[in-house]
Length: 224
Image (cartoon, rainbow, N blue to C red):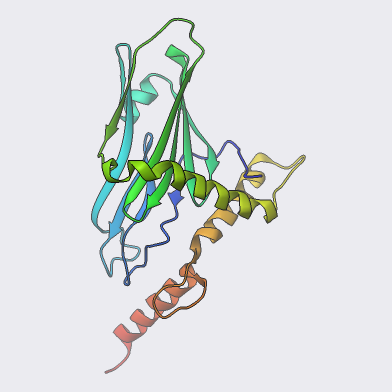
């Protein structure tokens, strides 16, 4: 069973199409308060955090007269933001707005190389009707809306197949140990890349990149 826990609401999604030099299609990273999107790196900017561009999908809410868009808006209303689903393929925010008894979940996943999927759900404990408007900022969804359901279903099957055999901590373990094992396994899972270029098999992107960086340093310091 895929683990659900009180994970940190920050993290990455796997982009299996991304390769630093062969196909730098971008790293998918969370953004406060409820966003997710691409950071497309400059070649040669490894560890310098430089990007050609960023493109995020972010979510805002208007509940009655209450407007929630920026991180400060959510903090001002004492909203609790957590993540109960935190895998290589899928990342889900849960946001509770106590003033209105409203809970929003936003599940992100990659629909295909150039499209980010997001499924929103809303529930409330309030007995009185209240108007809710969702704001979607940085829309790039029109061309992929028909693929979202199948893409999420495919990611769900992949996550289920992985966690059916992966170890999990159960019983009287400290909560940070239990979640830490999930973070470690999902990070390693994200680093194992699919065949690309001249590499015909699954490969460790982290170690390949380190070796590439060391080679670049050696070339820069070696005599000509």
